[in-house]
Length: 314
Image (tube, rainbow, N blue to C red; front, side):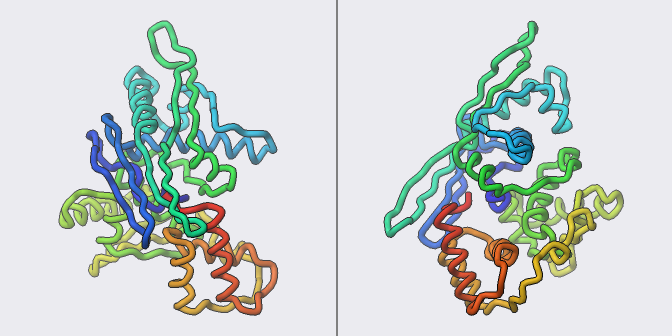
């Protein structure tokens, strides 16, 4: 979920060597490319496949490890990729970019600033090849950051048609819709903020054109999974649930907790920098079993403990 919040993955189909930096108060996150460029939105497929394998094992009650072995052909098929030589070469390039992209952050805990740097994957290895040199079995070691998110089940399911979205911007918009609209009926975001969250380097005019094109195609073909997308005249982009993701009201426990004060969200952002406070509120409301005496104080305490356990989202 943390990787869905910020544009860690590049939208470009050409090597992207930009260093990205995001600041949350006194803390920051930087994403640095290797000589091969930043990992792309399509490279993310490898991580999604690995995460799905580990989540399936966890749900089956099996022990899991940060080191995975899988057949390259299975990954290519599952992520709607070509299984010819071009597909295998693209997979090898994706592994190189994922291993080369580094994330750096400073996290303040106990009054001390801690610097940490890590990759999306620590390493990748071709265990077995075919006679013509194509990778057959692959070994991938996930970074501690990714593996810890899996163990804490900080993941969201994606619609299988996500892999049928060919445009990087379409994928990024769906990720944001899945993260922020989630189980709500709708979610609104301004076009400039959407551009920032997508990590697009296009001009504002060009970005509006690209989003308008996706909106027009979705209106005609309903090709965006889970959520429809519209662009209003005031440059507000609206994601609306198609009903494939159950709405939160159908699953939330009926604990009588009223609305939180506006100042509470401000305080929550201070104790849990970088986290989406509305996501944390949903987690808190699902977690509590009885109404607290002071809902605002209880929520702030929940956010503080959440940030202490998980640190700053990347």
